[in-house]
Image (cartoon, rainbow, N blue to C red; front, side, top):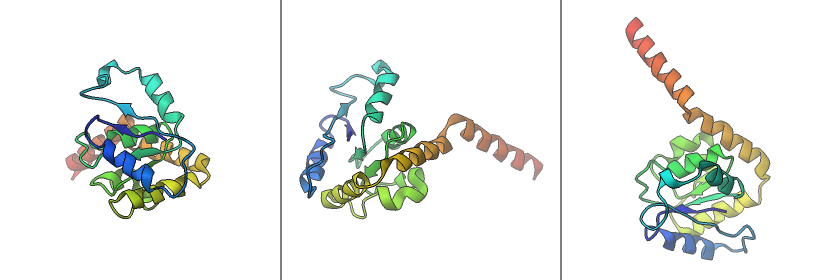
Length: 157
């Protein structure tokens, strides 16, 4: 499991979610710190970061006030890692039909711990494939095609 967080911002939530779990998570926790105390995004080796994600079973996303559009969720999905998150604005748009199984029903550590536990008890291989496929909806090629289609529709209207 990985929780990608900015230091001093929401690590208390990570501990609260893990503490709320009714069973021991054998996958452990491997935080990646970016920002004030960690390396800048530009200094990260992308292959190393992708490998870190791929070695994880679940992205535990606890950043309630993410100012980057929840980029870590999409990064994890692109690496085939299913996210488990609080019900945050914009997350349902990223997850689409997967929201019901990846977004906790309430913004509490207990609810998020239960969401993580359900994911860990699932067969993760098809979920990993589905997360990757879903992430492609947000790729540059798809976004460019949508923009061109919008311009074409406007010009022919």
